[in-house]
Length: 415
Image (cartoon, rainbow, N blue to C red):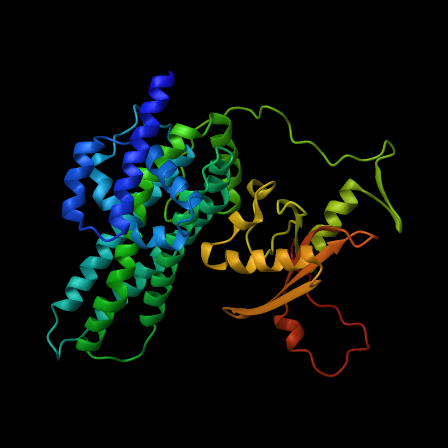
């Protein structure tokens, strides 16, 4: 067994050193034969471990992101398939794969529309091709739910196995694909334009978005999903299966044959005194009352403890930012895309040092204006206990004018 472990470690060191040379600028055509000679076949798990080690050694996530498309292309024919990748219909991996197949078909259809657009003469009518592209891109926007399940659920479970580096890299690449796809959607909302102008949009905006989505599918199919099957237990796949409906599906519904194992242990309720109430300095609430109170608050709450781990979030059907039980216990830095982690770390460092007690942001999300605040939570002696995030849709509040002193009921919102 020790010899096998040593061989794997040596194999991974060889792989890492060669990839470093690729990062340093050596041409792909010189690297590929060297990989084949020194490394031979590798596994998706080894690629993940290699990325993890590169990050641990100080290589920036952004640098790996910049090269990981090339990594996959260079390593693609060296990756050995696991002994078995078969899963029951409806298993989370089966659903990810069927969604990828549906996305691939939609990308192919969009490319067909691009080809039709490219074939037009200068005085040709682009209306039909552009309408088709709008429809295809609108359907491709459903990839957001695919990415949400991957980032919030699958990545969380991989972290239990000390695999966070590849997740950070892939989340960053997901965000790149998101940005390109949104740019394609926005470009297609333009008004009247000539065939030549639409052809330029097709080449410079839409085609890169399709290529980015396709590359992410290849990474999932060739690296992420096989690696996850090697690492995650059936109980962990069952956790993903149970929480996935809260986020939703992309283009296709999951099959129903999969039957997850029963949970090893039931979820533990909040510990309460024998009388069934939680006692505070200013009163007491039952667990049911407390849960309902958080659900009816007109704000979303998330609490991160002094060790930077997510401990709690309020639930409700109108949450602005999606949360899932999988984030409980997760390092908050891993719950944000790489491009914004430095902001999170700055806030936490200032709160812990006592330099600041609050931070606030506001953003426009389609028709909604969202106000996001962070508060340092401290005890009576001003010791830092954690950070509270409060997010609120203030669109209606911003529109208030004058006064309302008389009772006037609004239509109740369904909960």
